[in-house]
Every structure is written in structure tokens, then in C-alpha cells.
Amino acid sequence: MSAMRVKPLFKKYLKDLSDVSLRGDARQESFYPALAGLLQQVSEVTGRPHVHVTTLPKPTEAGNPGFRLWNG
Image 1 (cartoon, helix red, strand yellow):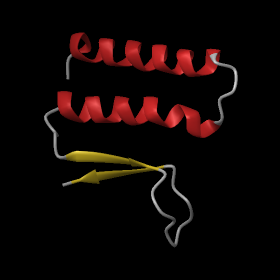
Image 2 (image 1 turned 120 degrees about the vertical axis):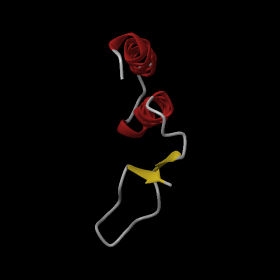
Image 3 (image 1 turned 60 degrees about the horizontal axis):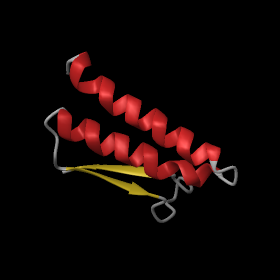
Image 4 (image 1 turned 90 degrees about the horizontal axis):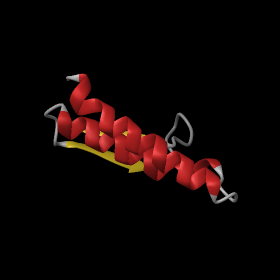
């Protein structure tokens, strides 16, 4: 993956994080949509459009995950 294709994704991600933070009332979960968006975009740019991101999936035997990435 070339830096030219990745740089805009991370710039958008950092802007999204900043926007959430500047609202002043964010919790940890408030930032999840920004990360989910980044992960989804990276999967598409790298030729993996079948990857799916689930934020706050149901609990598992291992605990309560914040994210789950499905790879086909």
C-alpha cells in the first residue's frame, strides 16, 4: 500500500478524533466510529472489501471486545 493512498485516510482519522475530542463530552466509546471507519477504509484500499467491522459486539467467553473484524 503506497503512502500516497494511506496518508489521506490517517489525516481523516486524526481529524475525526479531534472533532470528537473537541466536543468535550466524549467517552472511550465515542471514538469507536472513527477507528471503525479507518479500519474499513484501509481494508478497502488494500483490496479486502469483504472485511467487516463490528463495534461493541456481544460479549464472548474471553470478555467484552470493543471491536471485531470479520475477514470473509
